[in-house]
Length: 142
Image (cartoon, rainbow, N blue to C red; front, side):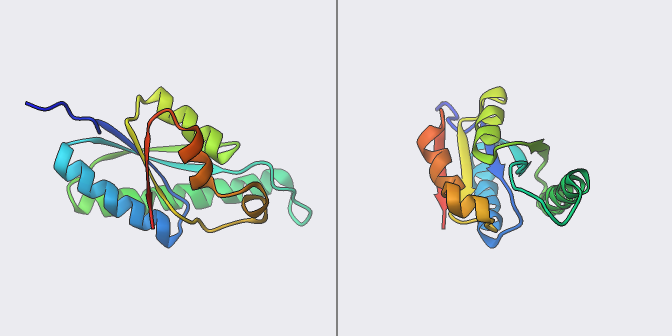
C-alpha cells in the first residue's frame, strides 16, 4: 500500500478561467487519491481605494469571494466532492501559505494567471510567489 502524498490539497480561487482549470485538476487528484480539498479566496487589502469607503470596498470583495467559493462548492457537490471553503483578508500569497501550513496541505494547485489587479501586476504573479515560498508542492495549471 502506497502513502497518499496528496492527502490535503489547497486551491486558491479568484474567479478567473485559470483558477477554474486549477479546480478541475484538483478534482482529478481528489478522485485518484481521495484527498481532502480546501478552497481559498483571499481579499487583497493593500489596494488603495479612492472611490469607495474602505469598509464598503472590503465588503464588496468579501461578497465576491464568498460567491466564488459557493459556486465552486456547488460545482464540486454535483461531482460528489466535498470541500472546505476559507475566506481570508491580507496579502494573497502570504495568506495562502498560512492556510497551507495550518491545514497540513501537501499540494497547492493554482492557476497560472488570475483576474489581475494593478497591485498584482506591480508585485508580480501570485502563482510565482506561491511556487517560490511554499513549504509544500505546487502545481501551476495553464
